[in-house]
Length: 133
Image 1 (cartoon, rainbow, N blue to C red):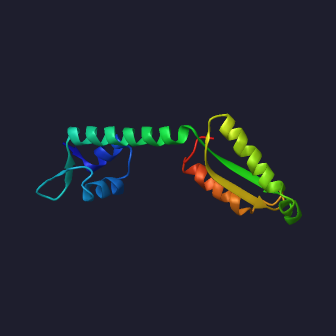
Image 2 (image 1 turned 90 degrees about the vertical axis):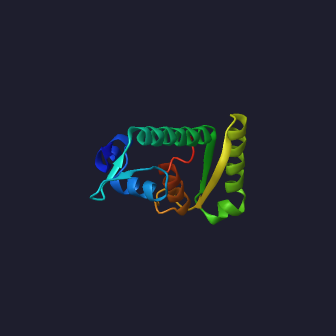
C-alpha cells in the first residue's frame, strides 16, 4: 500500500488530482484508522494503464488533423476575396496531403500587430495539443 504522495509521484499527477479521481471513483483507495488514503499497486497499475490509453487515443486523434490560419492586412483585401482564396488553397493542400482540417482561424489586420484574435486562439489550441499540424 502506498501513501497518496507516493501514488501521486508514481502516476505523475498532483495530490489534488488523485483526490479528485478517488472522489469520482476512477481509482480506489483504502483508508487507515487515521483517515489517510492508501493505494494498492494494482490500483496504481490500473490508473497508469488507463492514463496511457487516454494519451494514445488523444495522439491518434491528433495525428492526422491540422488547422488552418489565414490573414490579410486590410478589409479591402478581405472584400476582394483574398482571405477566402487563401483559406481554400490551404484546405486543398491539407486534403491533398491527407489531413483532416479541424479548425480554421482567420484574421484581418497587420502582420506587425500581435494582438490578433485568431492567432491567439490558434496558439491556445496548440498548447492543448488538439491537433498535430
